[in-house]
Length: 137
Image 1 (cartoon, rainbow, N blue to C red):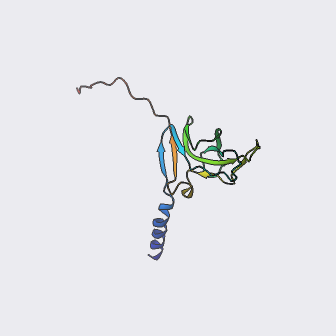
Image 2 (cartoon, one colour):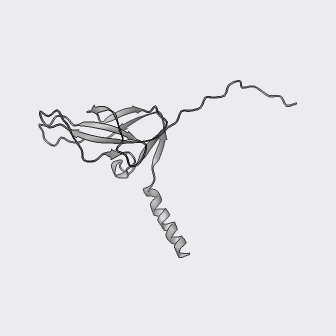
Image 3 (tube, rainbow, N blue to C red):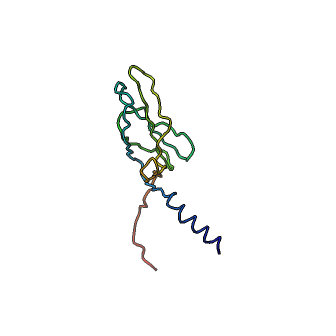
């Protein structure tokens, strides 16, 4: 009985930590907070957005670097997606950016103000045609 209460207690406290909202869509706009320049002479920070289908990979870049703090992403391959954003710093006169050490991911509670999320995209099936009334014999 004691073990049952222990297991129940673990499940009760672990469940909120695993809570993640999934949205079903083929397009999603993600946004993030701007990162302040480290030096006033720096060029504007840029951001690189990533997608991934698992919890461990570095993801695949979505387009190129942008200065905006939101991006509309259109999904064309079925699956479940997480999104990540990395800041790229460009010191004055430099043409090669310095990426942030980490990436903010949509499935990480600390990176999403405790609102982790993902997006599922699956092609919807066609709808039936030839609808008719069937008369019972």
